[in-house]
Amino acid sequence: MLWTSGYGRCGQLGHGTTDNCPIPCTVLDLCGSKVGQVACGRGHTLVYIPSQSHVYAFGQGFSGQLGTKTPHSRELPQVVVCPWLSPGGASLLDYAEEDSPSVCLRQRDRRALVSSLRLLSLVHGLNFQAGC
Image 1 (cartoon, rainbow, N blue to C red):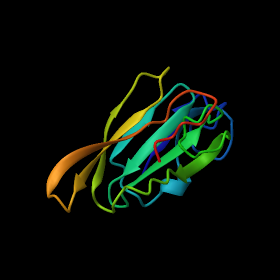
Image 2 (cartoon, rainbow, N blue to C red):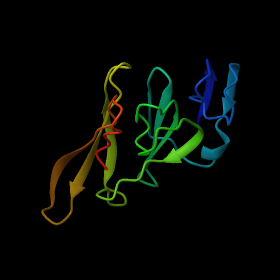
Image 3 (cartoon, rainbow, N blue to C red):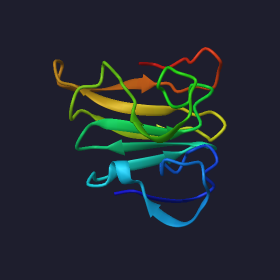
């Protein structure tokens, strides 16, 4: 379960609105999910759910920072689709500074039985450069 509060103008609280929220409220779309990690940018949020091996993104997306390959903001969590990400094999490693929105995911390469790093770049730019 995830609770968010504060400034919500860009939808980064995940409540389905762009309203500010002065007290913590549940992100309903993630109810029943055990949150592994959360990374917050200036106007967007990334949430990793280990049991699903999914990263959810919501908030400001006009520069591609949600990784959804569209220049649209989202007020509700949306799965970041990564074709290289195998189920049960990823974890959110790091999140860059708020002005340079990017996230690094670690994936275990089961064929080689070694740990490897794969990058999912959610970078600021008008070409929607997403690593997926």
